[in-house]
Image (cartoon, rainbow over all chains, first blue to last red; front, side, top):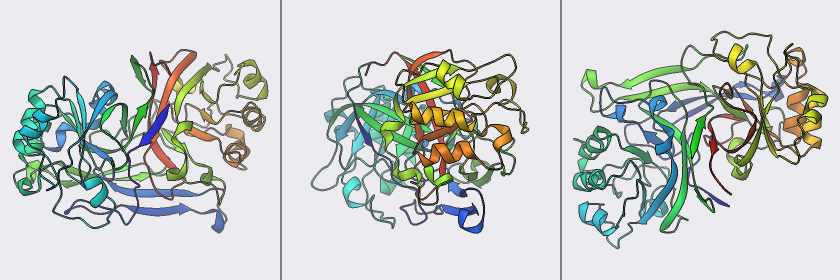
Length: 215
Length: 215
């Protein structure tokens, strides 16, 4: 069994979406101060690091994190290398070309993983999914889709957010900030486990791709 | 494949360890206020809900969460029903009786799961693991051990914390607040994924036990 951790570290100086606040780690108890143990407390946006968007993120009565059935998050998943020479956005034609063949969980690897995700500052020139790409994923029966940057929305759509509306409106789970730099195109066993934040529209989710599991 | 979610909800009014602070959910953006999406931010102790203790919790130079190899957290695991009529603590004799047979991941189910974990107030009359029980686990080669309440420490040891010192000092990962109420004695495929809080001595970890995986 080979476990690939595709999660990024959560730390104070990390990549974050343009309007968001970075996390804060606060010390509560320290052994050096005479406490029996180390204890910290964190101030974390729900969209920190490798995290999921629940339908509630864009749909006012959509499901929140604790209500999502875990069978969407665990099982076979396709990694699609969508890297192009010109860093093109992922549109309907690219989704069709990926030949998903009924895959319900899809992770798109782009140049974001190597070029942007490791940098600490937000860069608006990233690769996302266009509105017609999102609709093509819904039409193909995809239930879980991942991208390797802070948002899955194509950059020039970040005012109306149609990709999010289409995915959240159809109950598709979104994973953002997945680090796919070392992952090859292929099928893996996905295990993506968002912490169970009741009433939340998103949650950090440690995520692994496993080779060698039969199911 | 059957997925058992053994994680408890993280919410403002939840069970918490005696000295700890409960989590806070803060609204950042609301659709009702004209924002394009819902966004929340959470203030979370590292030991909130179903969570792991990394060695750093009690060992000043012990490993923090992001450094822990994930192969400890993923793989076959034994659930041991350690429920007794008198709610006895889990000691070396009980560990021996469990006949672990080389299991490296062990989850102890006690009356805590049904009697205490669902209550919102801390109750000092819980079942934990005694110091000699912890040493017996280390001697048996256990690398991951779970309990179904806020701390794995036997209640009358919660001043000197010897069970934590023994486990953390030997690199054994601790999972606390695992809800085993509906889980039967047996072997499952464990997937416990702590969020990757860099430099932290603990982290919330969504945790599942899966039936039907061969590995």
